[in-house]
Length: 195
Ligand SMILES: [Zn+2]
Image 1 (tube, rainbow, N blue to C red):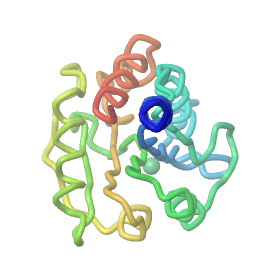
Image 2: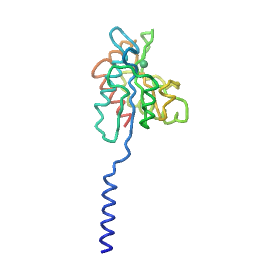
Image 3: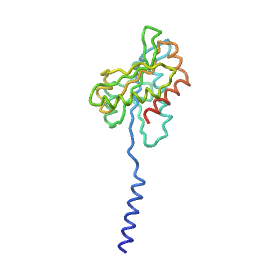
Image 4: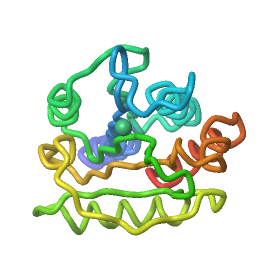
């Protein structure tokens, strides 16, 4: 009888262990700008719309129940920088990725750029940046990873990176960033890097 009870106890334990979910990973996708803050502008195109469209595609790609992907905004409204980073800290996020598109007066300047913070998490942030650099589509050239203490980076308590997905001021980058195919390819690259 004692043996049977032990067997039942062990079996119950194994069943419980096998059904206990693995640790969920929480990733914050910070969708730059929004509302009255259009970000970079080229004619009728706004940075805020491009990054929202790409972020939503990343979310659509996520079928993994162990990956909790949270957008700082999923509609066109203004979110302060502090609220963005506070959300990441409240959710005890494992990663934070901030999405932007660049602009400069020189139309020949192009490329994808990653910014990371310089603090105790620099190494982890750099690993994240390198993962994204590897998966990012070749249609947009890669610029070097740069250290910058932007608010969302320096105040986040997890590894983080700010991505300038390409230059809206450059015709080739802009065409890619605004095309459906380009946006899906960028979303897939971000999703693969997160995973
Ligand atoms: Zn921006």
